[in-house]
Length: 143
Image 1 (cartoon, one colour):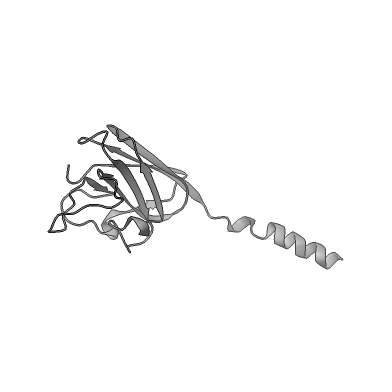
Image 2: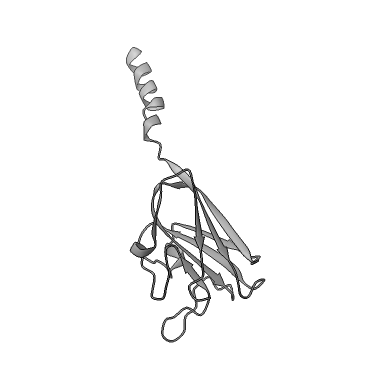
């Protein structure tokens, strides 16, 4: 009987120290053009695969239909780690970043740590979520 008691205690309390730390990540962006049109898509990737163009490969996704001048979204309870952020103004609401014949985005795109032209890479755009609350300010690259 004593043995069963200790087994039950181990099962109940054994995982307490294994809880993964999580934080909230707030992404803020100013929309300059085409307010009121389409939707804003917020993507949070935890790996290079699919970044930044394949929304279905993002670990976390959010869409906001009412596009106004100042937009933000908070992803809550995100496990601490390395992430890359992509936000795009999906004006035609097809869920994808539309491109021209050269592969350049036709819709406004922003990515964490991006400052200039060129396709954003996961490594360049990587941010470290290691706090309970973190905020990232983005600017559209092609605005």
